Image (cartoon, rainbow, N blue to C red):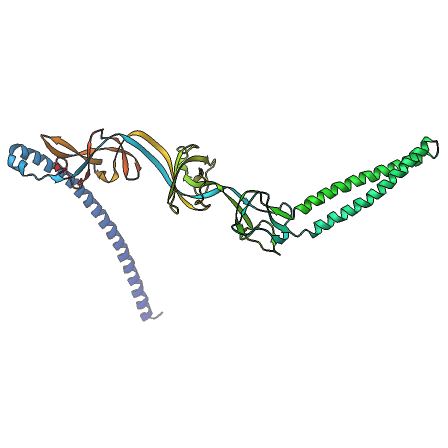
Amino acid sequence: MDNMQKITTLTIFTAMMLFAISCGNGKKEKDAAITEKKAELEKLKADRSKTDDKIKALEEELSKIDTSIANAQKPKLVSIQKLQPTSFNHYIELQGRIDAENISYIAPRGAPGVVTAIYVKKGDRVRKGQLLLKLDDAVSRQNVVALKQSMAAVQTQLTLAQSIYERQKNLWQQNIGTEVQLLQAKSNAEGLQNQLKTIQENIKTAQEQWKLSNIYSDVNGVADEVNVRVGETFSGVTAQGPQIKIVNNSQLKVVGTIPENYLSNVKIGTDVIIQVPDINRTFNTKVSFVGASIDVNTRGFIVEAKLPNDANLKPNQVALVKIKDYGTSNALAVPVATLQNDEKGKFVMVASSQNGKLYAHKRMVNIGLLNGDMLEIKTGLQTGDAVITEGFQSLYDGQLITTE
């Protein structure tokens, strides 16, 4: 390698090292800037809280020693709502689907066969026991015919054998003939009689097999799928799905999956509200089934609730399911928008009367569950408290307010 190549290689290596150092320094500077800004933000929040407290203290002091300042303070317009005990419920909300209690996927009772006739089309209402398809029955029919012909031949032979036996028996009673001849005649008649019984049983079996070429509906309902044509093989199901599907819409249910952490909150009989947005209908029902296992993929369990008979409901419709997992008849609740936070915790602003004037005060609270836009308050408020529901933004503790 000559001197020029060495210089070029050294220059490239040096540039790469400088680029890597600059990237590393850039990331460190970015992280340092983020940390610095976070710290500055926390400091500003703390300073603001201290400033608010100082403002409040100074205003209280000034209002005591300088009546002109107290009179000059302009009250802020707010809206208030007095708290009263009310019923409060919490719901687990999830998306479910409507399913039929009774869906039948029609399949041949015997071996698959070639379709020779179709007596139903998609959308037809069918009844239990109605003939839907006819499969090729040529072999079964010929088998029945052959067995009946065989039975007729054996019947003829049996009649002759029984006649011979009766004659031989009469001769034996007259001491004519031998006992061997009598026993042979009896054995022939009994053998043919047993053979006839076997053929008769075979005919019954063949006739049952022949009947298997008729495909019947086993439920009342609507033919939701008819995916087979004359000349095709009917096996009940293909790679594309069921060939004939009968749905009974008279018994419908909603099916949904709930996360496993709610397992102890949901039981059979739990209240359920079902909303079907497609038809703008709401149904009140109860949990009718709770799955006994947790799905390894979804980490949830199946819950079902029965629906009333409604012509507008269809299987696979989307439903919004609200399952009640908590309820009380004596709760204090406030609009969730009124809840605020500072470094000390969660609080709401309430109005209280002092010397004929209204003042805003900060009230620290412990919260419960949320239902829509209403938030349950566990502690910190009591019946009759006037919660500020509008105009609470930017209020400070002790600020003069008005509702007019």
